Length: 591
Image (cartoon, rainbow, N blue to C red; front, top):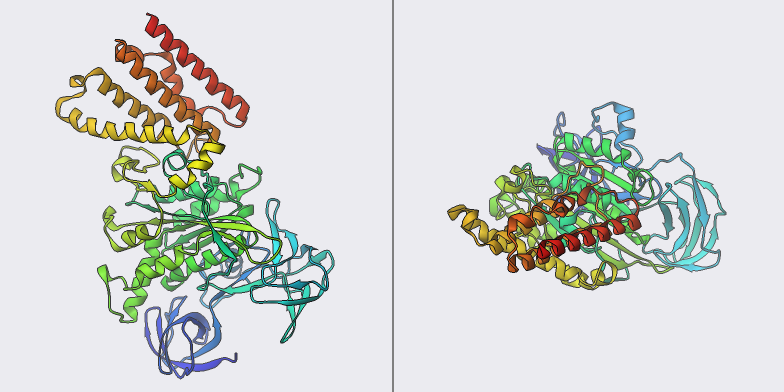
């Protein structure tokens, strides 16, 4: 489509009003002013377009030209995504820094993927084959841990008239031609896709496999399924960002897309510095070899913040279509909603609750609904998933505000961060009595088969002890612990062990930062076994002070820092601990 030129009529912050653009469409990309700043149409009245500019509009004047490109905001997908660091509209920040220095100059652009780098392409499709969208043409070993599958773009169908031999090619080289009804279509290593439209798939399947994060409170009590959605609401300082960092580092997914949406610059700096130094627990290589970062900090243009989560989810969908499990972290959707509110205010739209636009809930739903576990298009048959986790920052920790409530109506996992827990240095500060997971019943079968047949019962009993502990704490505040009978004081001791020896987990400890499945299964089993034996001993007349003075109590407290690099050694350690517990309680009862 040819470009059309209009002129700037009015400027209101990031919002541009332009006249002389008949036939312009919603979400069409425009180039604004002499510097050709990038913007996107978000309202049309006759031949007048209202455009949100993705860069600062300082210095723009009415009368300057506006070019409508005829295309919507899209991203380039292909080799080079892994390890890349982009802004909200997929501009590569390291390349732009090399061009302009530490501060981005307005109007600067760069190719999202390296144009001159050769990639070793290995064809898997054959000449003469009829191909459709999603078929795998070949592979590129992008990093040491990520095999990039080159796909036929969705919507393309026809006979493969030729395909390149195994060799090195850049992303601009043609590697194949497809004969379509309209003529020969050249294919390269890349494809483009509009960010506001979800990529197609064959079918969406059930979510029956958990996303194992290595965080005990999440995996044990409030698991999220692969292809599921979760929300982490919490006030300032409760640990939302650190929790998302932990999920990004240790989740058992093939790829990670981390979207820093309106967060403080120092937090994104910590991600950019820390991730390249981290080792993937599965491969031992750098975590950045399977990670894409999108950094749109709070001092960057507000309109680009609104686009950043769509850029992230589109990249995640492309990786999913290759048959990979993808984790997407959005930190935070509250900052994204604030950008939506500011743009809506500039458009003079009727505000809804707390000034947010009336379509806030539907926009959030559109984003989270792009998660899921699907059968991808094309052949060979592939299954991939996108698990979306979004942080929410309610002002003053008020969980009744619109963004939090709209998010909770959509997502199926709620990890409620508690200001009280954080003030007591109890981390992760996930409130185990307010949080919930709607995937728990669906995942019970997987846990019984892969972790232990008694796992669902262990977690239910542990939650029951914690609930009873909360009830007794209210009594203790009135009359003190000494007024309680021995059996009730035992509940307090068992709850203390669950909280301090199991739920508390240090993100900074070299061992405790990640907990494998076999370890947290045995940890909880040992604690609940101790609770069972403690009840029996008290019923037989053994004083509680003697029980909590057993040497095994200190060993239980040290379980979390036990070395875990050798699973068989770890399992032997817990079985020896179990025998020691039986022996000490036997001696206690005999005495």
